[in-house]
Image 1 (cartoon, rainbow, N blue to C red):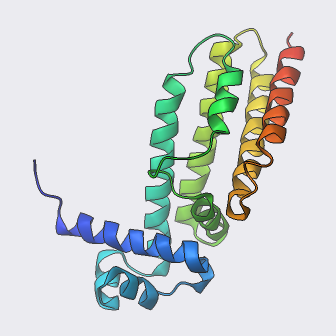
Image 2: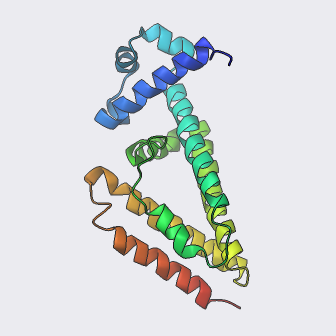
Length: 197
């Protein structure tokens, strides 16, 4: 097995440190000096391997949204069956026990920063469009008789419910409201089915 390059190893160490700091301090409270200290490196080493603070955000965005996209794409492959919306909703609202996914506070922070960094905005937009598109395809497999525009609307509604649900995680409220979000997503699907033409 080939050894990972020093560039890749150092970049991952720096991104891990940056992510830990965002979880503790928010993005605005994290400086390159703090990242260097957390990673056990000099600031100049961080700049050499990753660049400035915006470059660091873009690199973290590529990693975070790339991982989320890969994991959800794998998941969607298992949902290609008739009348699969119930399973889709269950999977989206399962407690996250997978360490491969970052906590929602990280993706939320990156989404907020994307408004001022065009490259990061492109990464987030691509992820969001892909997420909605994947859910649309799952719904199309389960409900081919439903108008495409109605499946798309339902997909946006499910994504919106999911993101709102995920946003409660830092407060520890996601399990308290899981049933309500599940009911909301189910109503969205029932509305889509009712709009068949």
